[in-house]
Image (cartoon, rainbow, N blue to C red):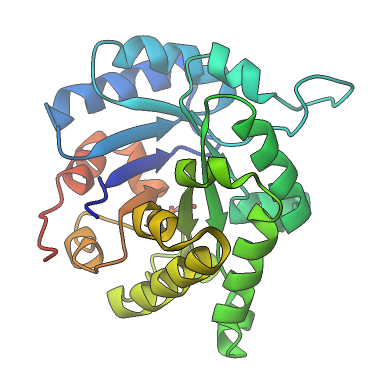
Length: 255
Ligand code: PGA
């Protein structure tokens, strides 16, 4: 099955409203009319509407970086899926390793957030990834398979085709150290096999698995040439309109 590439920019905690307007506007101008791939930006919550205005009328999609599992309640500091839909989001990133590392997010928490997103029209981008210690201990695939399994456990299979997954080795995020295309491909293939066991081969064949971790203009082509890499989740380089546009315009060489 031909999977449409998804190129996503995770702005993290960068972007006042004025900066978001400027960056999203510059991006809209530099990307041009891409039709064979999807482009998404995920600004901070407070800049969502400024970014939305700047990309109005373009094909750039809007996403958020986190979501709560409940639709309302006494959860100070949290944002519900419906609130994100109202703000113009079509996608939401869930379980980013920074959430797991700094805010104690667990696979069970990811599962709850995923349920919250799926109760609306949001398309979830569920992140998984091993730490350096886990890689060095040889437990990468075990960790990833657990994160995938526990993250999507018990979700109604009718929702499975909506998932996007992102493999982001923690040791490659913001470090300038990318997984080699072969290292990434090995994990992507394992994720797809796990999805096939959990949700069936048709879902596994259609699910997009993004790679994230120091994606730059000079490594995107080699990453995207791998058969199971279906897009990128880009942090640092997504804050530079020229660099992100170049990443979006990667050269397709997959067979
Ligand atoms: P990076 O971040 O591209 O800056 O490594 C990727 C991510 O955390 O999504």
